[in-house]
Image (cartoon, rainbow, N blue to C red; front, top):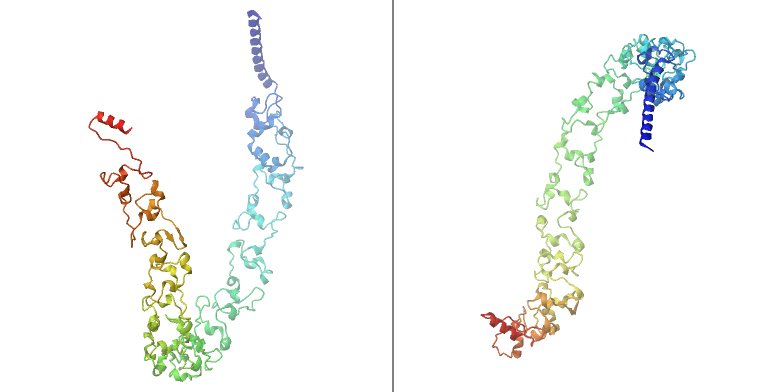
Length: 603
């Protein structure tokens, strides 16, 4: 294509675009000129601005633009609530037409056929009869009408707001005066004769919340007690019948009435207000003049006396005191111990009556009952198991005199074994005084000594050796612990390796031994030394510590061809692998020439 042709084509495209923009501008003006009519008054402010409601070439976009302005309706449709939210899906223009003039009503509502059930307030009962204008104020949107009862019926509220705004809790939509209040859900449910009582009987005015709930508020005239028993009438009376009382003094109080108390009048004990002034419950509060004990036995007279008669023989139970009567005490006459009616002055210790019978002369204290019983003074019932020395085994069969020399000094009896068994001690005191660590009370033999707790635990073959093999006598500590004491005849080394056999051997078997000469001595066995027998170096017996000379000359004097001219430190030249092998040694010279000559000689 030539250059002229390209320029012609570009010019044509530019002319076309300019024509297109000119057409769009004319179209916008044309749309305004061709409008089907004026907008309604609510939309008059967007007159001429078609883009507020229309999108060119997209008719369905109109609903979206409507929702952008009417956000409350859009919310209803999203939440499926109120009137618009319950309608089937359809375009806004199906119900709301436009371009019909300023006076045109956008909302054309047929009140005769409108289904109010599609709103949040279905019309039932008396609400179905009034005109729409009774609730919907002209000029305001229908959705702005309040759903609260008080919004329309404030003048009908005879309670003056004292019961709140939830009128539907009591009233129905059929008729305002028709109430369906459930009194059982209040703090004062109606029972008995209260069910048939008229509301006006208790509710003197319409301020129901201020109605008193106390029985006294309505039945003050019926109170024959004249307020003495306070205002809690329900404690005795019920709602079925005022004259019938259900109060049970035995179960409803902590003071059951028995005997003569049942015949007494209420006012005898209840002199004041029954709730503010609690009547006394102690016997002494009413019978203080009858107390012959002068208060020494406390105020709980009922422990001995009954309500039938004050003079009735006492039912006192001596077993409930700190001194119950058992054995021969049960047959003793009261006057034998209680000389007067001040009973608490009588001594309760045994020595109070039996001091002359104490053969121990007071050395064992005054608690005679620890040994003696009230059945018979001469037969002691002492429980030795409760002392610091309980009797077990053959000790149970021993007589008291075997340990207690005199009855008047029982506490001085020795408690350690050696105190009684000194003559039985075959160890001659060598094992101390605690015989019980090995022997027990069942029999002196056998002993239960644990050798593992001693300084010589029995291991290996030692565990099967009889005691007498090591202990020839009962002086056990005389036995030696050194191996050589028992195994001198087993020492094939003839003591050349000392007497500490356990250095190499163990108790499992005599033939098993283990000795690391490199780690346990200062003389490492290497070279030819590793194959040398122990007896080759250890030739002299040693009683305790093995001390063998470690110098080479001690064993190799016969191999010294130098005849001692080079001293005793053979290891400086010789090695242990072979005596003929000479160790290379550096030669010290005073000049480099001498050093080189020495090097040639060594090589």
